[in-house]
Image (cartoon, rainbow, N blue to C red; front, side, top):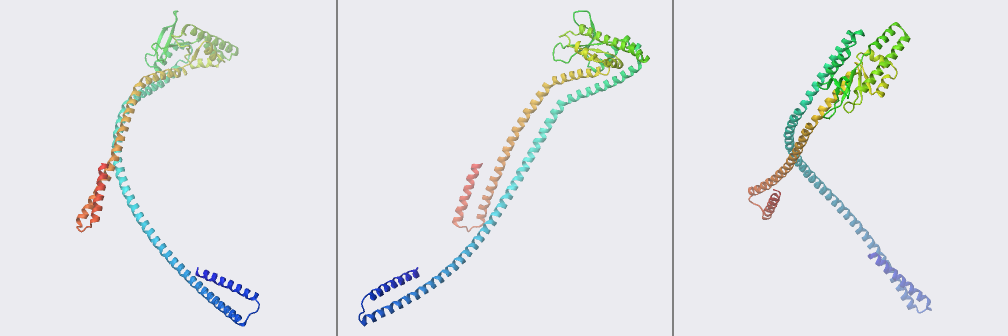
Length: 423
């Protein structure tokens, strides 16, 4: 700043000198005394200008020195400040890391203790609940297992009866000796597959005196379930003619015998439909039973006969291989009805179990809240213990400043208030 002022002064002086010289040069020549005066004045001005320039150079040099010293000092201060800040941040980082490690350790210990307590409570509750549910489920499903065992036993009996039927078919290989055997065979199959009391023999259906051989009660939830008529037919003459024609290789006779068998089966189906299908006392269909698989095979070989009989007369043609399968379906219907009757009791049992589960959930919720309150109480007890420990340390050191005593008392009072509020 001083060098700038000096430069301004030098410039002003040079300007004034130029003005004076210009004024002097415009005047006419004067005396020699004025010339000498002007010369001395010019010399003095030159000297002052040189001195001013020297002072300005010295001041500039001094300013440069001051700037360099100030920069060096500022750099040293910056370095020292950076070192202090580094040391301070390192110390704070270590303190924070130590505090964080201590806090993590304390929280880990608390979590482990709480987890152990909750695990013990959960284990006890789970054992009790498991025992209760296991007792109830064992009691409720024991009867179901007994019923399934009985059904498996019945299936074994069915298989044994099927084997016996096969033996009987081999025994009665002659067609003539099987004339009156169809009804007995059908009764044996019904007794073997269906439960007792699910069918009747020689039932009178409709207003006439016609009696059907067997009538099966259908598995329906009504006071008077409808009956399914089952009648056994054995067209011996037509079947014998067909077998004889096939053995002799008589194509024309075989064709005529097959036509006669078709007419006989159609006529028997019409009789069954007219006499025995009487809704609502019966279902809307009936069963025509053929005692041998050979006869049923021959009937099934007639194109469209079984479908036509079923569609036109609502009569199903069954043989010894198909009849047990249909009866098993009816038997499964009775098993389904029995299971449905037990559905309400099982539903009540499951409802009671659900209510017990809801109550157990409420108990577990209460236990969780109690465990949380216990955790808070333990933490409060630890804080109180630390406060009492500090007071005991003050008693061990008799020389304690008044400020430290007041701070400890205030801290003790604050913890006491906090613990009272929490408790």
